[in-house]
Length: 365
Image 1 (tube, one colour):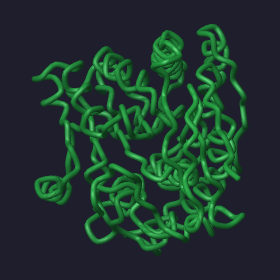
Image 2: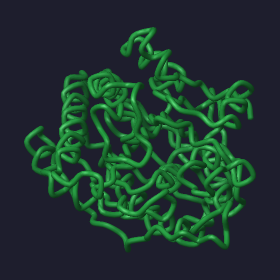
Image 3: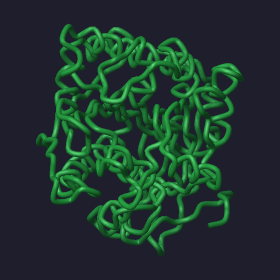
Image 4: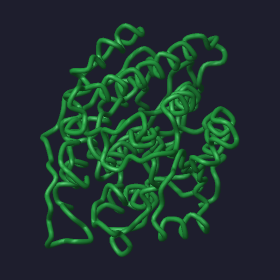
């Protein structure tokens, strides 16, 4: 029997991911508390949202870990992912929009894996100053925060690559990188030969933010496919936002990021939003936290206005879901509701172990 998830446009499930395990320095683990203290929940309430705060998991801390110079602090990274994943699953199943507050960037692996429990085909829109495409063999630092996207698309340390049963979590053609400004040589060479669609900061500014953002959502087919939005705070130029480890001059201004977010979040098939790489240790007066809170809340207010303005006949139809191997897909369609089939086994890991399934109309594997 199919389980029905009814998406509720005005409901947000807030999840704290207090981890700096994959980061280049401590401090990121303090971000969820700092963003709440800066008024995030109150600002979302004022915008018309009901917020269900699911709390934080146990903190995972930065460690130097010189014994593993190319894969630092891997056990703590995995511990954070395993703690976050069930919280995002719970949020997604409730019909709320999961809003995950990192923490370092590796939380993307858990967020995507969680929503893939319920949806066959998930795309990724990745806003970051860096492409995060290094692997242990190429990394200059050994920090997994610089290797996140590589592991999402199935490259790198086996323990992370196989976080979702059979890799990849997201296929390379289903990824849009947006706002990158700095690259390692390995990453630049990889992008030349990868089907990942790459919108550099220079391209975004040359084409115009709105036009580039629209191209990004078209690339991931956001009208018909579900996607996760990853926002790394360092995508904002360091001239306006310095509370992160690797900010710098140039790139996208705050207004540019806001303009792009307004387009991204109003897409009806957005499954989850995560915000990463804010470091309160670099924000002594809390001004950067307030900036992020306003950025997040104002963008999501735009989403709420867009979704609630959709006539019932134009509301999202049934989305594809992860199904048991022998179970037929449900044909029922309802406005702002999605029918999903139960995983192949009761545990998430068993469902993941069956590997990704294909959906009608998807590109061939």
